[in-house]
Image 1 (cartoon, rainbow, N blue to C red):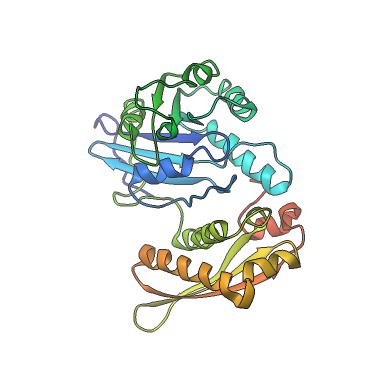
Image 2: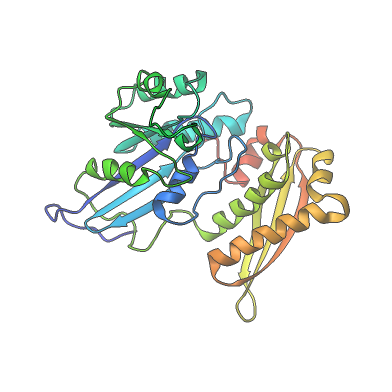
Length: 306
C-alpha cells in the first residue's frame, strides 16, 4: 500500500476521524483539508453513506482524515449500516474531530454523539463549524460554552469549512497529535476510494442537488460499467435505483429533462476527475424497499455485516 518508513526517522502519521450529526459540514471539511473534492456534499441530511478517507501529505507528515456518515437514529437498515460505520471508525483512529454547527445551539443529536465520544480513548478536538453564519464580527460565539460542556475536548476551534477560516488551525492541532509512524498511502494519493466509487457518488450528488423531499434519501447509484473506448473516451453505464414508480418519474422528469441534467452535471465532474472525455449512460430502476433489503445493500456497497 505504501512506503514504510522505519521508526526513528521522525516521520509522523495517523488517522483522524471527522464525526458529528448529519449536515454539520464534515465532507466540506474533508475536501477543504485535502485540497480537492473526494467526498460529495449537499444540503440534504445523511449525504455521506460510506467511510471516506482523504490523505494530507506534508513534509515529514501524513494525516488520513476519515469522513464518517452523520450519526443519527436509524429508521432502516441503510441507516443502521451508516451509524455502524461511524461508530466503528471512532475506535480506530488517533484523533477525533467532533464537528458541530456552531451557528446553532446544541441539540439532542449533538448530545448523542458526545455521549459516544466520551467512551473513546483518543483525544477529541471540538470544531465549531459554520461560524461564518453567525451575525456580526465581534468574535462572540454564543453556543461555544454549550458545546464545550458536552465533551472533554483537548481544544475548541471555531472554524468555517465553507470559507476555509481556521481550517489551517484544525490541521495544525491534529498534526501535533500524530504519533511517529509509516506512510500509509503513496505520496500524491488523496483518497482510499477508487475512481468507480467517486464517479458513483458524483452522480448521486447531482440527484441530491436536483430532487427534494423523500427522493434524495431513496436514491442509490450503481456504476455497472466503466471502460475505456477509442481515443480518450471513457464509457460509464450506471443505474439509479429508487423505491417507488412515482420516484422514478420524478428522477426522469418531464421529457427526461431532470435525468439529462443530472447526467450533464455529473459528466462534467467525472471528466474533471478522470482527465478524459466521458460518455455517461444513466438508467432509472425501481427496487422496492431497497434500504431495508440486505442483499441489495450489499450489492450496492453498503454491507450491513461490515
